[in-house]
Length: 220
Image (cartoon, rainbow, N blue to C red; front, top):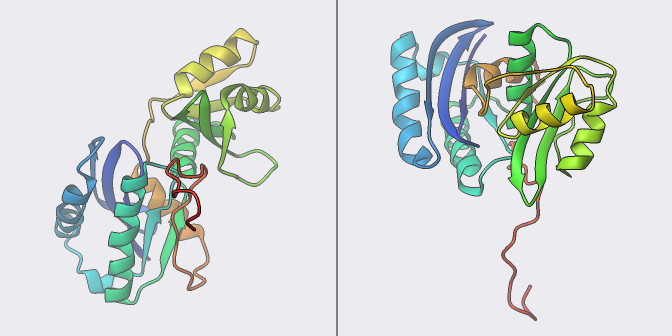
């Protein structure tokens, strides 16, 4: 199965083409803005690097968030358009799951967590490899620390708040490893999307925090 996946949700823009679990081509560039301009040329370059035509793809993958408002919508809009043009299934995965699964595989541990700074002393958190199913959520830093501290397994951390969290957990005596992963890699978006069962539903952006902007009083 050939799967093309992209990510624009956080601090990078990336695209990858996999055949089963083999990486045929990959592009990754750290960036805080400019995803909309970078994505289409990056996808074209990946397809050319692999020597694969778009018609030969079997499915598509994309991160749905959490992420920046503009960033996560760039990838979704692009891949929704490709889905319509190609008639191929599009599967969405969270940006946190992609980071956590990469960290878990690289560390060789059974559990991992992605902790991304959401400001206001809050974090986006998703834990993979424990008994409960993965669940992306917005929590205060201390609530997230308590959840991770109570886990029975050794764990590796990824994300922009991972360093701060690792320090806090080690003070409490929790054994943790710290990865250098701070943004999703589309290789892992593709690997996770390949495990999902297509339903025909179109992935939607995942917003864990209500928008700050509010309509004037009396308008809905």
